Length: 92
Image (cartoon, rainbow, N blue to C red; front, top):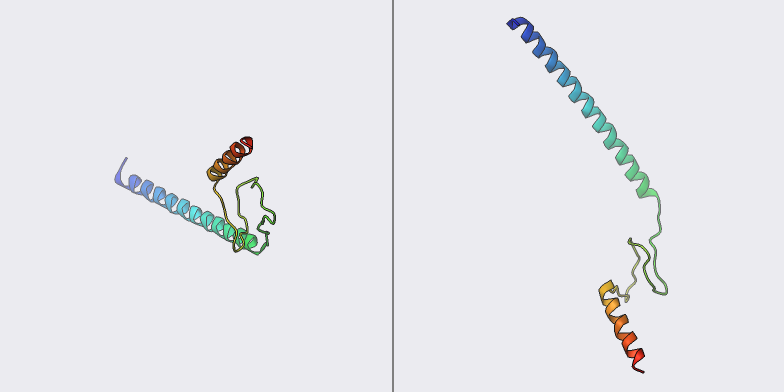
């Protein structure tokens, strides 16, 4: 291969890389625009945050509305209190 053909191949290869980079950049921009649109649509949707008016067991992980004066008790503490209450009730 002489220097002219290798120079031409390098230019062709370089041009191909530039086109691929441009295509990736455009695709990335499109994906980011789509993600921004979806986030804006979700922000405008008013999804209610659940609250527990009477307390109770939480069935799935997620957001919950807490009110002034309410407590959140970790699961391991609830188990401990339940065991204590059961043993106390048995001893009566």
